[in-house]
Length: 163
Image 1 (cartoon, rainbow, N blue to C red):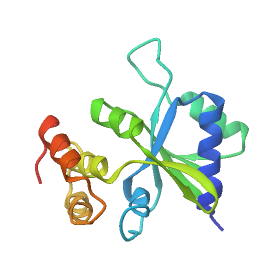
Image 2: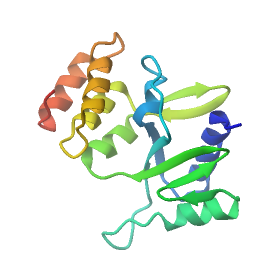
Image 3: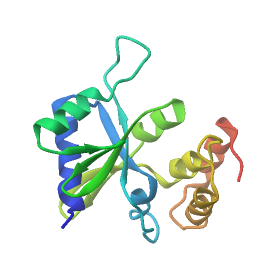
């Protein structure tokens, strides 16, 4: 049986090794902390890697960490305690900001960093990520009471996003 809490603890342990500088849970699993949960296949984790020597970011250190701990790699996922985890290196200023401003939450006694709902909306509305499903998730978040409207407006303007 998969354990989300154990998976989150493993992600915290990964951060503790220094392989990643910081992280924030994103995607559908992050919605659990803000609105009604949505069924999903995997856990998306945005990660900041230590400054690479080149422009290419390699996830090899994460896969090595996983192998040492007995976590299998399957396609783009690392299977941690039965939960498929996709580690997504930050891909630009919006993702960097989403990680840096993530909020600390607790899930079944495990600390976890979660992308704020305003940043989830912005990430869902990026042209490279837009889909009907993501626009629907963005709209559900936008309509929730947990949104900082000023921050959302700022993000929409700075990153030139629209619904």
